[in-house]
Each structure stands twice: as C-alpha cells, then as structure tokens.
Length: 264
Image 1 (cartoon, helix red, strand yellow):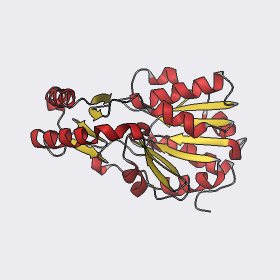
Image 2 (cartoon, one colour; image 1 turned 180 degrees about the horizontal axis):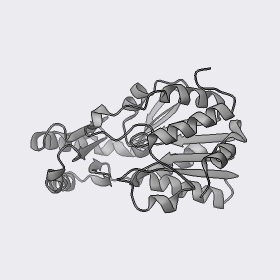
Image 3 (cartoon, one colour; image 1 turned 45 degrees about the vertical axis):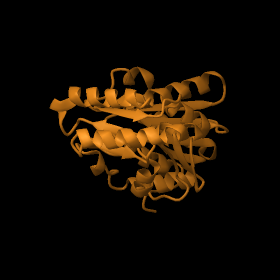
Image 4 (tube, one colour; image 1 turned 180 degrees about the vertical axis):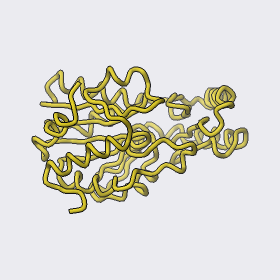
C-alpha cells in the first residue's frame, strides 16, 4: 500500500502523460437509497474541471448512462464512459458498442415487464441499452427482485450483472470496465483508477496488467471504502481512501499539485 502523499506525487509527476479514471456511485457520489437521487459531492465539478485542464485525460467510467453523467458533471473535455463501456462520450463524440444493437428490442420488452411487476423505485432503465433493479429501497424484497429479474432476463436472452444491492439485465456481450480502461489509458505513461464496487475490480486488474507488460510506467489503483465494499477490494488496490469525501480531498490535492488550484 502507498499513502496519499505518494499517490499525489505519482500522478502529478507527468501530468500531460497521465490518465485519471474515476467511478461515480460510491466514489464521487455517496450511496443513496434511490438511484435517481445520487449527486456528486459539493465542489466535485470544480475539482474535476481543474484536473481535466491539467492532466492528459480525465474520465468517468460508470455503470450509469452517459446522459446521467453528463448532467451531473457538465465539464468540457471530461470523457464519459457509461454502462460499463457500452456507451461513450469522448471528445464530443457519442458512440454505442455496435454489439448491443441486436438486443435493444429484448431490453425494451424486458424493461416493460419489470416495470409492470416491480415497484417503480426499483427499476432503473438505462438508455434503452440495459435495465437495473435496485433493492436498496426495499431490502426485504431482494430475493423476489432477483428471481423476477432472472426469469425475465432468461426469457429474453439477456445477460445479467450483479453489483452492490442490484442486478442488471444487459446485452450478453463480453464487456466490462477493463475494456473501457484499456482504451482510455492507451498512449499514456501513468494511469489511475478510483472505484469502490465489484464492477471496478476489472478496471483495477487491467491497470495491473498494463503495468506488468510495460504499457504503463506507473499505475495507481485507488479503493474507496464503505461498509458495503467487496472483500476483494483491499487486495486489488494500491491506496485506500475512506469514502467519497476522502477521495475528493485527494483529488483536490492533486489539482493543486499540478498547478490548477481549485477555485483559482
């Protein structure tokens, strides 16, 4: 493990050659009972604006749709990767992985069925590409929600992704945050990823591979702890921060290190 000082030094040494990738929920935004209520911590936009201006690349890599991320973080030059890599907004160009196209009708049908069978606060449609069921608002219904989701997903030929207190139905294609991370760090010498959940573990693993095979000179994997963090998290990262507040403090220090003072 390394500490905050070493993290800031590593990421601030070659700012133009550094890529910083950050998850949203549980990393920039505290976890909330209802998915639609999530918001970044105060001052997050200002910090990310400074980092986007000072680093080679700053990107948000999330299970959220790109449209949601763009509304929450309206920052010129910030790369947005949504739905674990199935959609992207980079350099002003929006794209969707073409492999999802054959499954869009199935996703729409599954979403309609789930909305008819489950409470409205449970079902989160995602850009017509996926649909997530959250049982955080109704934890006593977790088993029922998973049962319904799996039955509907299997009937429509969709894949499933389990995350913290949620299950997502999505096109059955081989894509996760490791694929997005691989593309975003290409051509950079230093990279970091900050995340808190099961869905972030593939991104941490990709940074490890890039460092081992020489694609990166340095890599920092930042784990954001919470009471719901997966047990594998601590063994997959280089530095741990105690929640979104501490991550924001670390990112603020980095912005100041590279000469982009927050609010300046």
